[in-house]
Image 1: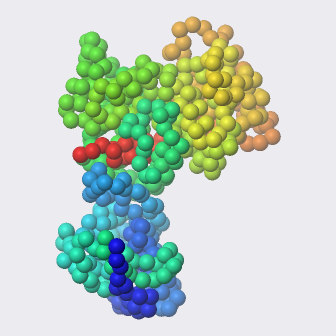
Image 2 (image 1 turned 90 degrees about the vertical axis):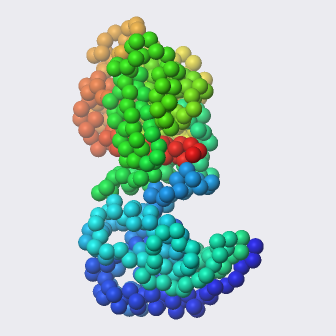
Length: 179
Length: 309
């Protein structure tokens, strides 16, 4: 197994600020907007973006939720590993809100498909956008593209992209791992 | 460890401590799901479940059916009252006929102890025991423990007394297994005639004085007197039973602590429990019912994930 650094801590930081600014450009004061991090790994990115919006750009009221898609996945009984659920925490109404899904890596698009179904259980949103730190180009199984992307990468299927976060993995970095 | 060690839920005695932990953690997620505006997930959309009830049931059957539907499974229902069982068909024939319609999972209640185990050896489907005679009722015990965990934080170290008709109760036996597996202390309390002779072999305390039992416990699980299973007279009269083993407000107020009251239902108000106790804040009877759906969803989901395509 070999690994290569795709992004270091400084690059991750610059990209996070750019993504935050792009969100502000579209959503202004976030009064009609909610951020939803997808469990498990999108939550770290969502927390970080929300923190930057609050601390560096003084946006006071950020609504932030976490969505678990386990029960909505299309590979139940099809994958070798049992699917493990995480908690969902959405303590606001999404009816008529603009939702931004936040996930670390966009790969086949199947998680996002599941998230689109899952979020319907919380009401009918006005619109849904997708923010992702890493966009794995040419590997999509579904017609799903990000609205905000950190970095687009070309990765073959036998390789894995791993996003590390300071609060969980002791450093901010993105690695390309050859399995 | 995120898979059950078993392919069927036939009784608590076949489960491990880790199985129970996994079921409870999964149930936590489902409890959140059933409190959403839209209380349904599509996980089991390609699974068909048959509910076979060879014995009457209202609550358990509704709870299972609701759990199945909230997981988007297809459900067929069968009650022996309106079936060919009355015409002399055997259990295996009945079930095989149903399975030939491509059913993946069977939830069964049957008056004979061991019916689920027997079936699991002869048919090719995942079996959930929804009560077999006076043997086991595993999902009831799981939801009881889950409700204790929810109310008191954990089951380990808690003192639980099961009061009433222990002799005819599958709820009692499954609860004893489940509580002991999780490290709780268990006592049974009731008239001597309704306590099985060798119950102490299971490592439970036996008490015939209700007041002493209530003073000892953190949780009292009140069972119904199962008149329909009684072939002889086990106590002189219902009135006398109530005087000796019925829980009322005065009895609870006389204790120096507040204990939690549970009941698996259906309640005989005024017999094993008075109305003011059943409707008080100490009683978590309706929480048990709500948790029943979440726990059954967890059991069905975890067993379904082991059915290979």
